[in-house]
Structures are given as structure tokens and as C-alpha cells.
Image 1 (cartoon, helix red, strand yellow):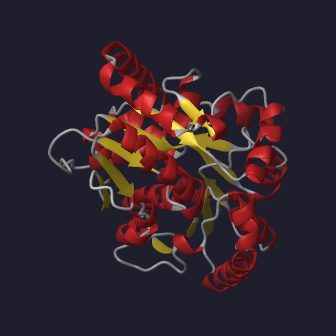
Image 2: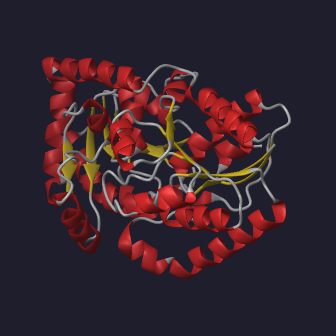
Length: 370
């Protein structure tokens, strides 16, 4: 069968690559065309993406305005490419601002849509549920707390666990450096990096410890250099994210998939998030009406209580970050409690084999429809 996958950012590339592996294992005749990154390229045997996700990713309202015209061009290109390639199914992966528009096009064109990694409508823009219900044949979710939510919405879905468990457990770890260090994962988008790095560099000055920055696959060293300056205790490594997390004394993490990866590797962490004033203002208005969402990080959401601290917007300061990192490294009881909570998060995410299970479900769904 012919599978057309669309990932618009680093986490989608990771999930997409694991799904491709599962589809290839379950369907020896699988043929792929995709928008994504280097991980999906490797999973597809070196086949290049139609468009690399680094040319797609945006963060917040101000980024959307700045990249609006290129996004519209990409949308037109994607629709035409799908129309000409004629896939058996289109699989949008997260990235809802773009992918919901693609889903509508596919639905109106009679092309089957399996949405993988559901838009976080439980956190914001719940009106998108109507779009999912209208344009998506089946939703494939990856978080346990989404099950009761989407049941209530009446949207057909499948939950087979979270593919990060396989990705983290299957990694062959190698220590990235000698001695103790702090891991810093500032995100994959330029906007995230520009907001995280200045604060975290000041925190690093206060801590006086070595800091390893996990460079995002879509970025280059030039994206980090202006913030690091002359500091000789800060190093950026690319392609070593899991290694950096695994052996770190503690991690400073931009809210996102990385908070789950830290929980699965057993790394004590503090999650940080900030945005432009406009984006933050809109976000606070949205979250005030969503009384079922109490946290911004996926790990805490899976647990249903705070396993680790979240430093948000004005609370994200060099002093606050440094203080929390010191507690993570120096307070054994505090750290041990967090690690114990991590075991509950892992249990909630299910066991191994999620990507293969999802792939088999997708194939069964297509064959049943035929």
C-alpha cells in the first residue's frame, strides 16, 4: 500500500520514523512519500522528504504571521503532491495548523485520513474536535489521559501506547563526556531557542557546572553560538540527545516531548516555557476556561500530578532555574521521589511495541474498508 506521511517538526519526525518502521514490518509492500526529517529519511531507506520539517516549523502567533506566506505555498504544494501521487492513506502527524487543512482536502477528495498524534484539543482550541470528527477517518492517540477525553468527544480513535517507550529503550547509549554535567534541551524551533538560551546561560553562570546542550537536528551551531558567547563550560552536541539525557545529573527542558524522554531515561528535570507576550496572553485566556488542564508538560499530564516543577513565563528566571537544578542535584529525597513518579509515568504510557501495533491497526482498517 501507498502511505503519505506529514510531520512538521522534530517530534513528528521521531514518531513518523517509528511508524514507518512499524508499517514496513507489517506491510512488506509498503511504499512511502513524506514530509519530515532525517529520522524519517533513515526509516525510509534514505529516501528524501518532499519537504524537510525545518522549512515548516513555527511557534506562536508571531511566528505564524512571519511565515504565513511560505506556509500557504507549502500547503498548496502538499495538496497537489497528494493529488498526483494518489496514496491509499494520508497520515498527518501532530502539527495541526497545517495538517488539519490537509485532512480537509483529503476528505473532500475521497482520500482516507489516519491522524497520528492527536492535536492537543484538550489543552487549547477544542473547536478543532469538530474538524477531526468531520475530516478524519480514525485518530491514533498516544497518551492515556486522552482516552476519556476523546471518548467524550465521540471521535473514533485507537490507543496502543506511546512510541517513545520503544525509542528510548531501544537506544544504544554512550556517555557523551567525562564528569558531571547538566543537560539543556532548549527546543527545536528558533523561537524556543531564543527564549530558552539567554535565561539558561545566566543560570549556568550561577551554577558553575558543565552544561551540555542537545542541539536540535534541524539547527546548526550558529543558532546557539550568540547565546553561549565566551563560556567554556557550555558545549553543544548534535545527534546525542538521549545520551545527554541519560547521564546528566539533571536536565533543564523546554516543555514538549523531551519532558517524557527525560522521564523515560530517569533524568531529574525542571521544565521551562516562555513565549512572546501576545502568545502568552492568548494561552492564559485559553487555559482559564480549560479546568481539566493543570500542567503544560506531558509527563505531569500523564501522571495527573506534578512529578517535576514547571517554570512558566515570568517564573522562568535564571535564579529560579539555578535554584531548582541545585535541589535536583543536592536533595537525594527530592530526586528519589521524582524517579519513583517516573515509574508511574512509564507504566501509564504502556509497554513496548506501540508503533508496530498502530501500524497493524492502520493496515487492518484499510483492508477492512476495501
